[in-house]
Length: 242
Ligand SMILES: Nc1ncnc2c1ncn2[C@@H]1O[C@H](COP(=O)(O)OP(=O)(O)OP(=O)(O)O)[C@@H](O)[C@H]1O
Ligand SMILES: [Mg+2]
Image: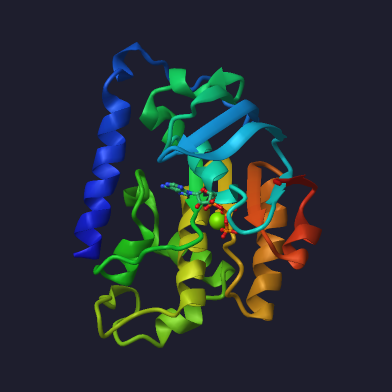
């Protein structure tokens, strides 16, 4: 039921973006820069962001910090075009995101969510939930799971990668976070949006994944929304929300 509601929600969001797609362009020569200029957003008549201006730069880990409810997740959703802003401009690679075809924009992002959802599918199908996943080899899949310290856990499951999830068979919260980080690695997109995605990881795994983020940032744009002082040390710059 939850899965169906989520699919319907995604469908509504997608269709709302499709209406004037024909006039839009593809994202050409993406350099991975992201700019918010005087962005204001109301959600259900509530002012959520007021005249926010931030530049996120390629080849850096760009931090967003601020207390609960300050708007970190909302900013990531805006960049991903889940909501439309009330005023201001958001640019990706110097192009206004409102002028970019939805699919062309999405092809540039991997979003590691604060509250990831697992579907009632096999473990492998939960990882390979993205365009282009049919090209992923078994070796790449195993390497990505090893890189996030998840492969040993998968090998201990009753049917390994084919293990089906359902009400009786679940992953822990930390394992689920690792699964979506593995998915992000396999997606190999130029811009990575990470929303509090290390909160539930054990210290060993956290160190490993921090090194991974550092390596990825050499060639990608990373935006990391966090409240953790440890995550803060990982960031090359910090944008504080009030
Ligand atoms: N659909 C919505 N309708 C109305 N208000 C919303 C909606 N979604 C979020 N908000 C409000 O927007 C504000 C920012 O929420 P957001 O989730 O971006 O905060 P956050 O900084 O990510 O918080 P946290 O640290 O808890 O993850 C909150 O005050 C929240 O109540
Ligand atoms: Mg949040």
